[in-house]
Image (cartoon, rainbow, N blue to C red; front, side):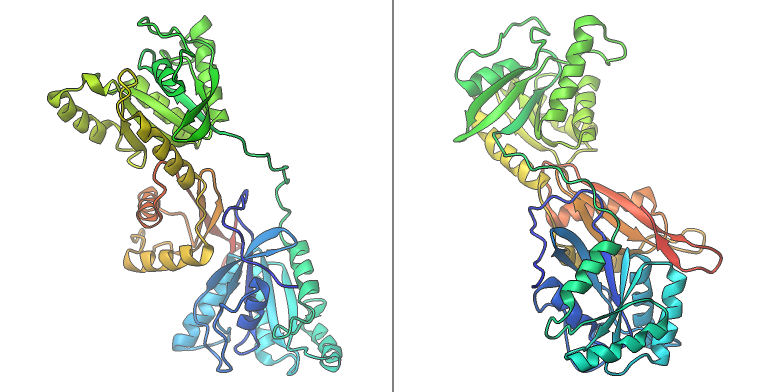
Length: 459
């Protein structure tokens, strides 16, 4: 039985647990990694020292996703390049949830193995002892001598042939942090779209235009719509569930009566939606109320399309002013998709469906762990974190913790400057897109266990 790569469409809630594979050179670490991920991807040669850096891969066992990190050979008192390889292995241990310590069962415990055990004990991480190269029963019996390392039960495995790998992976799952509660996947119906915006920007007119019939009351008096109105409409050959919401006028704390409940219902509609279309009146300046509604959508983590309505009222002078307003007022959300429409005339309304699809696709995008870290390594080498107080925190590793919206966790040696965190997010967007979707980037610094102690990651 072997592992498969993690399907990109699977939703993972919270940071994916990390399993580091460490050991002295040439004990079969990369062969074991290939066995775990179910394909030959880690480079394997008989020559010691082929693997130099930490290399992460997506893996799954018994329905549980995790990241397995291959490392170079660890040796005490290593010099030059070997020292850098050993340091990378120690970083992998520091950022892992579980460590697989691989020993060659045909050789038995060596002085290097015993030195590695002392390093692992300082890390205070759960360690499983893997007695590799147990290709037959006689070698498997000899592996019992590895109890002498003091790490508990050795798990005899033949990474080359797969012998014993299932038992080892069952033990890995037991040692990992408890998974988040599993919820039953809901059958997907029409994608849910919230139509939001301040009063009288044309939300009901747009709904009627899309539905090709009068489904909502349209009146020049602002605030005609109070209750959200759910409608199934065909846009671009696809059925969508639209919620037309009451316009927001005052902050909920200052509103009263009908307006207060309208504000709550609008917030509820955003929370219940997958993507929001925020309507702005293109003929008027972008207001503080518009900004607040956009903030509600991004804080809720929803995909976003901004529709500049009433484009039939926009002349050349207003178009010039609007471009300046967009640069100034919407600079925090340059990733939002924008369409210029007229609900009254039907201008460019057909552009909404492609924008909604793009935003939702970005919202559900998963970046493979290997690809993510290959890109991240190049980024931090080209632009390291600025030095503060004589030291600079380093970004060690990253994983995508979830989608809807995409959430990334950076494992680091210390807290990052807010500016550098924004820089990583901006570059992440430049590389992988995410048009129309917010992206969350959080930092998980390594926590020191004590004076001179090895690092330990925390959430």
